[in-house]
Amino acid sequence: MIPAQFEYVRAGSAEEAISLIGEHGEDAKMIAGGHSLLPLMKLRLAQPSVLIDIGRLTDLSYIRDAGDHIAIGALTRHMDVEKSPVLAEHVPLLAHAASHVGDPQVRHRGTIGGSIAHSDPASDLPATTLALGATYVAQGPNGTREIAAKDFHQGFLTSALSADELLTEIRVPKMQGAGWGFQKFNRRAQDWAIVGVSAWKRNGESGIGLVNMGSVPILASSVSSALAGGASAAEAAEAAAAEAEPQADLNATPEYRTHLAKVLVRRALEQAGA
Ligand SMILES: Cc1cc2nc3c(=O)[nH]c(=O)nc-3n(C[C@H](O)[C@H](O)[C@H](O)COP(=O)(O)OP(=O)(O)OC[C@H]3O[C@@H](n4cnc5c(N)ncnc54)[C@H](O)[C@@H]3O)c2cc1C
Image (cartoon, rainbow, N blue to C red):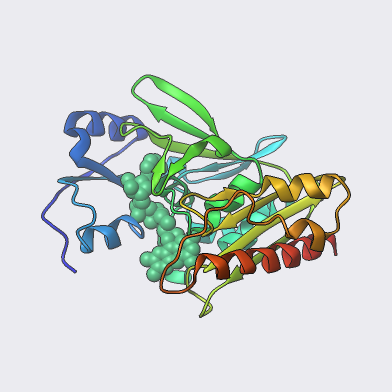
């Protein structure tokens, strides 16, 4: 449980972090809240020789109304997402999902950017921002680019970010009064989801994100198509696992996860319609 030896450098700006990554190459890793990277380092599943601390880049910690969307700085802590009045008004599903991440200690340290960049299918926020149709902003040595959430997750713990890119902002469309539902099935209140669902719907449109139903966060497009075609919540939920590739672990078999996904999608859609 003791990480391998590493050097520690603190970046004073996004530009400095990117330049330090360029200087130290592939053996360097950025650390934000450290609540995903440090456990991996303690298990020696990750052994970066240089840690570049971006956790104090306070200019990347903000939640702003940007017209048709809410702009969230990547270094914004889960607790600030949970408590944000702006998100409560315009994207309540995301604020609610953040309130279900781990325990208060985890939510005070972990960042929304770290959660999304880490690309863990068991995390609550990537599936939620995917369901909401978010766009991510990445900054690298050659400037900035936007990546749609649906193109971001490319495999287990693998994202579209290149090694020298920093995720700087998450842009989440306003929900404009859409109904929403959130379901997280776990053994104990503060555990990771065995399966989780974030869902919204409004006038024939919908978005359903699934947690822990494959190697990446899953967008359940078949459920949205069924709803658009007039299916009820219960009928549409039968398609919950159409895009998923659930894995077995100590908590559940793939068959159990598939069953759970159908039940939880139905419940989330019923919440959204209530
Ligand atoms: C006990 C415990 C319980 C937890 N429970 C849950 C839970 O129920 N649900 C849940 O969703 N999560 C849970 N988490 C994970 C938590 O949400 C993490 O904080 C989050 O996943 C990662 O954010 P971080 O800022 O800590 O990232 P870090 O651990 O600092 O970084 C994670 C990875 O992302 C990279 N990275 C970080 N920020 C950026 C950036 N801005 N640009 C590019 N790359 C970046 C790092 O280089 C690293 O590879 C739990 C964690 C712990 C320790």
